[in-house]
Length: 191
Length: 191
DNA sequence: AGTAAACTGACCAGGCGAGTCAAATTAGGA
DNA sequence: TCCTAATTTGACTCGCCTGGTCAGTTTACT
Image 1 (cartoon, rainbow over the protein chains, first blue to last red):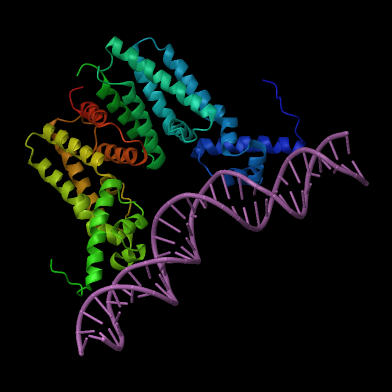
Image 2 (image 1 turned 45 degrees about the vertical axis):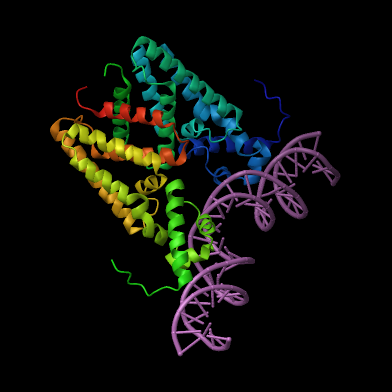
């Protein structure tokens, strides 16, 4: 997509790119709710410049969300759909999503719809919700999942996890992974 | 325990009791973090009176925490210990704790140690942690639980649930109960 | 050199909740 | 009933945090 905006002055161009870069870093490390003052400081500009160049937090998020979260999430979705066996597909997806949630605080902000006025952020949520539904439907038809397990249950599980990671202490990685397995075992058909 | 404090004037006595009553109600409905301004208003007094009579939020919590949460939690612990079969004991406890968490926002604030400077609140946490350990130890010895399931896993589960209930939407009761069962099935030995 | 683009530091506003205190009110004892 | 200590209160401050603004200053381009 060609840049339809009027050409920026050199300093504006430079600042815009610096803010983008710093924001990606900050969002990936600490989530989408990191104070703009801190992003500005790290970029060596005034907070007002973020408002000037991006219109504020929503604009900034929209400018970087693909690189921060969306690309990775869509890759998970694609790879999930490529898994042949339904049972394994579900296990793959849930493991991969939980991994993303563990590593990317911004992913949790997306899943929690922290900024509902950000169109791209909401589109990512929609896409994630879609694959949830798809997986659960396939899992039930194939008999891989317990019949009483719903798409709402998966949604709640991911959402609860996002809340726990956002508001609580960060669990040790191996503990976290072990708990993924407990969950998967609890929803698998055959009990 | 006889009241060791000097006898209060009639209005002070009346206000103290009214604040206590209202606080129990407020904490049970909305958790321990309900604004003191609202407790005061509901009690028909000024917020400063809560500070005068109870020293502030911590004092107020300490004054009512038994009635708000502790009595019920200790009853769960007692009843849990009375269940003979280990597997059923664990299932009973987890179900009962989750029930308490669902019904009592204040229980979640306790489990999250929202006010670490409140001695009684912290004592309740300690007691809850103790039975967690006890149950998991017994469950592993008896073979009722998967050997890799730890007391830390149970603690995290309860803690995460508290965070989800505190910060997220309130799930429908039957959804919530179903998810309890998925969890129990996921940690049960035999897979 | 002129001037519009762009930046900025200081400030405002809003939300929320804890906490304070001089003035006002109440209650109890003489 | 009066006096006065006990008690309450309304108004205010403070702290935290973040979004957002704007007149004056600086920068870059022609």
